[in-house]
Length: 173
Image (tube, rainbow, N blue to C red):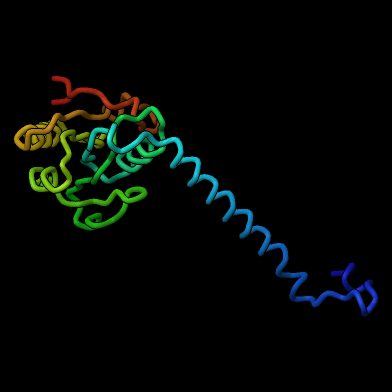
């Protein structure tokens, strides 16, 4: 502001313009970075016809991390087409770009048919054996292959990504 006050009248800049220039530059830089990130993520994704259509059971933190990992990794062979969660408050919410919570646990068969998904990934590291067993039974009854993420104690505070997906083991049930 002191620099603006020292300019001759012919070169004077309105004080509002001087105060808004910084915030406007920050918004422009953030928009550019976000747009560039979207372009890079879309270029890294494999083509949809080469991917396995996947439902994610669990719309919590692990489910969100897993869906973002599926969408952003060029090595991913999985395409998340929807999510399931028993929390009524999460119904209809988006986990990531275009991936919504489409139903509850009892809707596995209907949602799998609607989305043409053939893989169900259980993304609930804190699931009890009884809950896990129920999810696996519902997925298998719908004709889906079921996989999961390791339990919370195996993750040891790390984030969940596609490399953590594994077949269901007896210890999980």
